[in-house]
Image (spheres, rainbow, N blue to C red):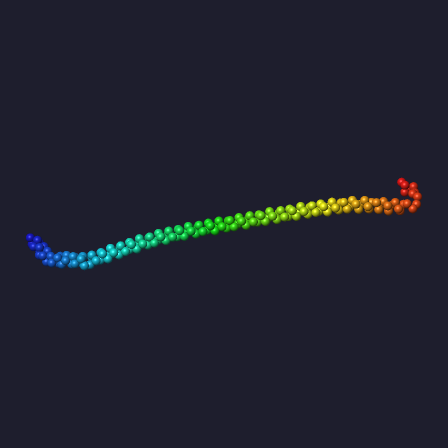
Length: 157
């Protein structure tokens, strides 16, 4: 029994301390922990909001980057198409110039061949005329040399 008595006295002596600790807990809870919890909750909400805002900003930036890349790709395609069209126009102009040059050169070659043919025909005709006249002169010249004397036997043969 003595032990129970000692425990009771110890409990009675500790009761004011327990009450004081309990009151101190209530006081701290009301004046310290609740405002601290509110501040932490607000901080958490702000952090979460900032994260969401950062994520939405990042998503918007990604969307703008994608749109920029798409616009850049489209602009490049347009430039390539314009370059291709210009290249085709230049090739067509070059081919037209080549065809025109070939046509002119073929015409010049044909005209040259016709002129040469005409000159050749004229030269042959002139040669035929002059060759007959020259042949006549040669025959006359030969006959004139032999005519002064009677022909000898060796000349006849």
